[in-house]
Length: 235
Ligand SMILES: O=C(O)[C@H](CS(=O)(=O)O)OP(=O)(O)O
Image 1 (spheres, helix red, strand yellow):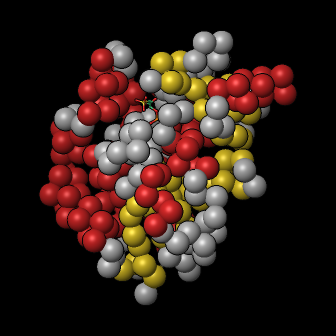
Image 2 (image 1 turned 60 degrees about the vertical axis):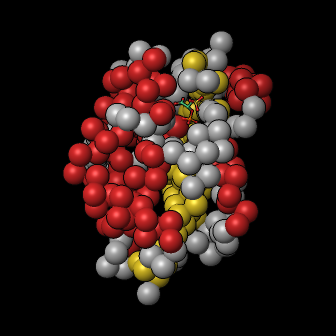
Image 3 (image 1 turned 135 degrees about the vertical axis):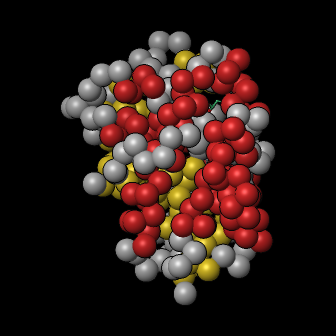
């Protein structure tokens, strides 16, 4: 049987074997949710950058540039890191360059994987369906917050482990623990995650509506996948 395991922070990813696996990168608040929303609303490809300046330079190549530092839109950028902003108009025909605090770092640290998927609650079922069709082990790479464990990415990991239990064994302690957490709290996800430190940070920025999108299941029937350094959508 295929295996599934969880890495709770990009700081711990060196402890895991990535080769041959599907790595699902997850940053519920908000980078991977924003990416999936952008792809669902017309963005044709996303390139991710660790630093602001390399990202900003993509403007001259016709890319929209999006990103934040400490949750705030970077000065001179077209967009921040808000999924809601990508629902406000049709972005068909546009390409996006993005830099965020945690999510884009987790993607760059997953490069040795056989496949990298972009995980978020709004495309959970599509991602599950795609994984079930592949004959590969899965590693869920939680972006966390500045190197630390966080509740929302971990709960997503639990949801994925639980949903894949008929096809993927979770012998890893982290995967087992998160499955139990999801079994206990998954039915009241919004209430449970409203206590999360990052949810409180977003509330302080007055962007509660982002939280709603981030915690809504199956809004989009797409899979976000990295192909040669670009994130593209697979329908
Ligand atoms: O924009 C976000 O929500 C966070 C910012 S921070 O970690 O709270 O500074 O970035 P992300 O990469 O989406 O976790």
